[in-house]
Image (cartoon, rainbow, N blue to C red; front, side, top):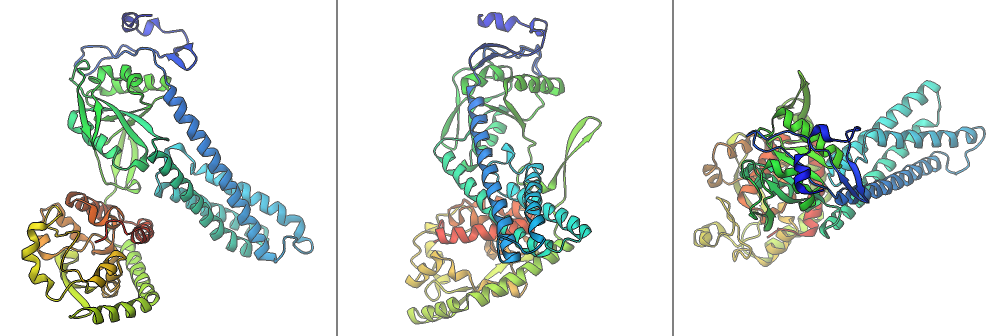
Length: 529
């Protein structure tokens, strides 16, 4: 069959069952629909496809999910055994209890594993996503224990309270830890070029460049843009675009998208804007991709909005994306204040020996005070004195004007890797972020939060535009998204973007994850100087 033969086929020429006809092992001729782009010029057609990349992707996904099922089963079984041993002190319960405890444990495991499946915690769409996968694991665990607790209460089974008190935390922590292990495994494989999703991006040049940049920003996400289609571009002319140092070929316009899937090896099509397709065009594209086993994703054009704020609402057959407003007040604010107070108090008490040793070391190794109080701008633009252990020579602020020309950071923020004002003991304190510990006093004084945007200087705030001033809606934090995403290695625009994303999307679960990632970043000493 020639290319001309394929291009002239229409809907009426399809096989009676409407599906592609197998041509060879791993090959399939997909149906061709006569629909056109918005300019109405050429029909979208597709040549013979070899979707081996789709088969390869589904193969590793199935294997990965099987591994998750195995480890989930082992963790749940281990939690049941531990709970039984802790409840009775032996693996052979006394008296009549020994007859129904094993049955209870088996039922308990079945319900828990079913809940993990029911909450889609092993969905291929969640591979490598982190927070959403963990959230579903925790939600499934608590749902299981709530259901078991109600049933045992109604049946008056006195083994349940002690049993569940051990199994719930042990099993949930075990599941989260094993998922973290597998997430690290996927990250390593993706770093080696495996477990990737090949993407063909369709949209205006600026839109697809932005989409390709975001998809390839974090290798852990597992996306690799292998081609772009630009509406109105015409046939392929060998042109390429550069995204994050990679050359990506332009495969033509939207009418050449299906033909390009084979040539660029894509198993997913990402659309950055649907106006060039129209309702009928998108529907036909979905049908074509379905027969090819290729996924379709559509960018909404909305960035840095947490999944918890997005709700899909079908209205009159039209799927609309509703975005909930950020939550700064009410119970959430009280919840955050309570967490800040408890965490800061525990941190100061727990690190008291380190605080005392650091204070002595600073005082003995250089002239000047132990603490350095830096004016920062807090919530609603109110200034406050942020406390840190002094890591620079006395009167270091007076030397700043001489060093401004050496600034290695974009924007109004000043940072250089080898600042001559830093003392030898100060470099050690900064390397391990020990100099930041006194800021927990600011948290107890309600001037800062444990997690929040980076506390800015007055001169930085004076240089802010209206968008960046939004950072002042919440208290600045000791740590934040900027801390766990590169710290001093981030550009000014990226740091601002992360701060604004935190302001709009903060939640207690997010704060806890940031705290955990901060500890890893501190001990990894990445981007700290």
